[in-house]
Amino acid sequence: MRSVHLLMPFVGSSLAAYPWINEPDTGLERVLGVEGYEPPNVCPELDQLQCIPDFEFAARSCLNASSYTWYRHASGGEWSYRNNLDSFQQLRFRPRMLKDVSNTKNTLSTSILGHNFSAPFFIAPAARGAYSNPEEAEIAFMKGAYAQDILYMPALYASKTIEELAAAKPANGSQVTFQQLYVTVNDTSVKYNLKRAEAAGAKAIVFTIDAVADGDRTRDARYRPRDGQATDTEDLQALTWDYYTEKLTKWTDLPVILKGVYTVEDAKKAVEVGAPAIYLSNHGGRQLDGAPSPLEIAIEIHEQAPEVFEQLEVYADSGVRYGTDVLKLLALGVRAVGLGRSFHYANVYGQPGVERMIELLKQEIVNDAGNLGLSNLWDINAEYLNLAKLKWQWPDEEADPRKQGLHMDITVDESLPEDSIERWTMYTVGDGEPGSLVFHVPPHWHKNHSEYIAVVEGRAAITLDGKTQVVQAGDPAVFIPARHTHSMVGFENEKLVVEEKAVPAGKYKAE
Image (cartoon, rainbow, N blue to C red; front, side, top):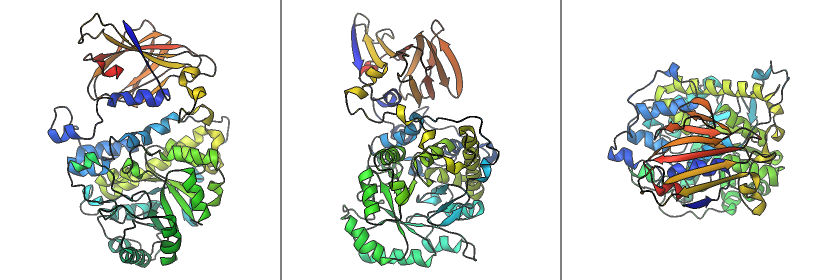
């Protein structure tokens, strides 16, 4: 028998990654009609949807595969898309108790570049609303945002034109929108679109800087050609800071926000050139696979240049699905948070769906802020986050999780046949010592195999399809079917040893 030791940047990300070791799911099975891959043919009623992820379920079930894929797809193996979601779950809160939160619900309002809104989130630029709502398309966003008093940032490549969306605004001119634009090699075209935005009454330009080349969007390429949709050109862009300062900002009197900032260096450069605001976003994982999540970017700025949050306004999107996600970004200094895909999913139900999603997210933020101990939402700061236990990277030996009480081993009994379930066994250990990381596997599912999970020592809370049970040493192994979402967490200061066996048996657990 031999043992294989696995290195882990941190338990949450490493264990969450192994379901995709064989190959990432980029939609090939759905195109080929693989049995069991199609979603259930159920289109729920709007009032049955109780959280933002419910809207994606609805869109996956109600839309045809091509339309749903346009919203769902990301670049490459979609690792950044997944990390956008996972990274929020690696950061824990530090709630404060015995606080008067009776008035928290009245403190959601904020200002964005001097314009007042009812909540610190907005409808982010996201194109082709007609795929989810052929009749209204983005008009449902315009009307829903106005009714709920939040900001909408129309995308340049919306299904409705800039002029059509402007016509959907109230006649009294009271609705504030920011217009998103891409830049091409054609200066005349850029100037023309700036004039269109100004004529439509936009109060700011959202200038996308992270689309200088097309994203490698494998999932979407199964339905549409790789046609240069992100940049409106087949050529890579000659886009520089000088373009921003010497051309773009001189072609318009509107404030120009830089969307697609990935690093503290670029955030500081934005301050240097006088940008009024920056927008932390990796394009929803659609551009560079491997780009950091907005939460990781915000943490980097908070740790290395926190003054940036005071020197200009900071917005963020990509991976936001819950009120707690919004609060984590606000705690780091972000002023407002965007959602793009999710509003397209809500648009399956038109304006009522858009408004219901806004209402649900507002209520989540209120409830979560209250449970966090915030009498006023805007009292939130990084002291409400447990940044000390967060390890985004493994930069040196001291950051090695094995020195923080975590390790994983795979044993291979070579005397048994390759197809024996007993041949391959994975053991994950958390030593439970004071100061050690707590064993944690975030929600995930396995595409190609089921597994048995048994607790050898200690106890763990295992959640399968939303139902949680505490399993102790000596209890029967828990069977996890393929394609069923599950997660697992240990208990602080308690040693935990977990044994996992894959079905069908196979060495992919060790690769």
